[in-house]
Image 1 (cartoon, rainbow, N blue to C red):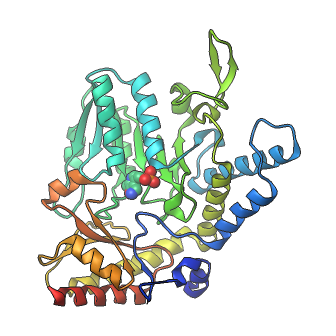
Image 2 (image 1 turned 90 degrees about the vertical axis):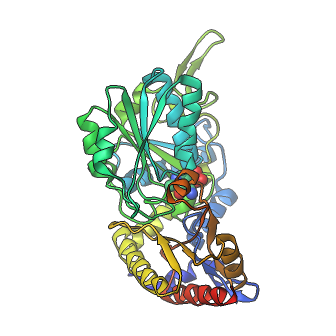
Image 3 (image 1 turned 180 degrees about the vertical axis):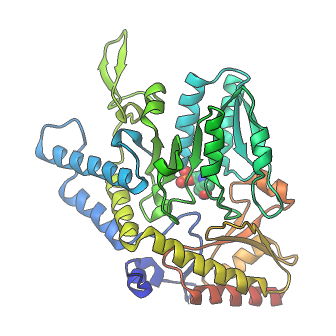
Amino acid sequence: MYNISNIRNDFPILSRQVYGKPLVYLDNGATTQKPRQVVEVMTDEYYSVNANVHRGVHFLSQQATELHEGSRETVRQFIHAHSTNEIVFTRGTTESINLLASSFCESQMQAGDEVIISTMEHHSNIVPWQLMAARRGIAIKVIPMDDRGELLFDEYCKLFTPRTRLVSVAHVSNVLGTVNPVERMIAFAHSQGVPVLVDGAQSIPHMPVDVQALDADFYVFSGHKVYGPTGVGVLYGKEEWLDRLPPYQGGGEMIQTVTFEKTTFNELPFKFEAGTPDYIGTTGLARALDYVTALGMEQIAAYEHELTTYATEQLKQIPGMRIFGEAEQKGSVISFLVGNIHHFDMGTLLDRLGIAVRTGHHCAQPLMQRLGIEGTVRASFGLYNTKEEIDALVAGILRVSRMF
Ligand code: PMP
């Protein structure tokens, strides 16, 4: 049952004050708050189980390993992967993309081969490819978008050439909120024999995701954006792909045998998990996924949709309001500017009223260039936000506007 006051009670931070005002936390696109269930399960594991995983014969190590591998199974179920061999634990979306860029380019791309990304990518889905462009001579092509913030599908199709090796695209834009038609994009890429990486950082917390239904070859996300801990994330890859890719980092855990002459690598998914994993973090992530599953991803999506629609209607009534991103399919993110008020001034003054929003380029400078602006104010909603908080945001903006 979606009982908002019970839900909010699970998140102690939501009842704190800042500058003597009740906190209105609208920066969920950057990171989400944690329910006590997540923090408690991690504390319990530190207090009563902690031991390094996979390598121990002793009781605690086996128990920690069972928890860690159980978390992998929770992630598998959550995104409906075929096998736990396809779930690689990483530090987050950024590391997942860097891992893939490195391993994929090294084994599947030659100088002159091409990767397709989009105008609305986060820097973490741009810069790793630029590093590969500098090191290995690959080329980057960019899908354009219209003024509403929707990718141009026909232009996307025209970017494919015999040298296209990979498409890497955000499921949901962290600035515009656009939900990209990744299923259709994947189907087209596959018709050209090209695999697709989906950056799910902004979709995983907000909608049900089924990697098999999407037919995504790779799907990545961060734990901290889905009510889990920082420092842990996921790279999903189809087994047939991960099998073909070389390791990213070397060290313990990822090997089968080592001599000074030669090393053979461990099986999936351990081949990609060098060193001690964040096994307490994976427990926290699994608990966070259980938490949102119990609420129901469909219910969360419907509730957040209602909030976003309400917020959009209210914000549009503010004189001088400009909203960036008006795609037909839009997630719970609203980027805006009001009159000539600088985004930084707006963010700072809202903060004094207890309202936490993000300002700036949102790690998407090329998108800002496309929009012809330096930055925006961004309000992004989570499963615990309320209409009263949106009213507080609107009242706050009006108050700031009157000051200018
Ligand atoms: N991609 C998108 C679309 C994002 O919104 C973010 C985080 N703002 C990232 C990637 C990077 O995530 P992380 O910093 O957790 O690695």
